[in-house]
Length: 130
Image (cartoon, rainbow, N blue to C red; front, side, top):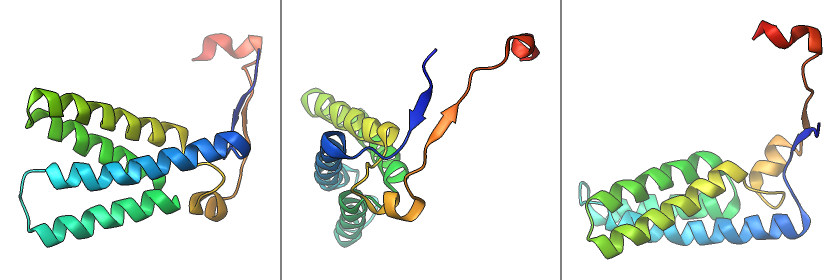
């Protein structure tokens, strides 16, 4: 059985996650601009800029990406069908970033360190204790 290995990937995978973070940062600007106008346009500019900078730098990436994915899906429900499909795709992109994590080239990797988590399979005598 293979061991599960979780870490902040570097190399080509890290660069791919950096590009995904930059794409989701641009999505933050587009999604928040389409949200229903519950607050002023200046507030939406500030919120979208904060989300974009957090994603571009990799600070709090998982939380910001999941919030942005939820906002994109919520925007899809109040939009036309062609825009709704695009918003669902944008939400899936942000959810993928939230699941994968920020990568080695991020602030999160420097703050929390590159840790290795290994999950060992259970011993046969404890298999029925679940």
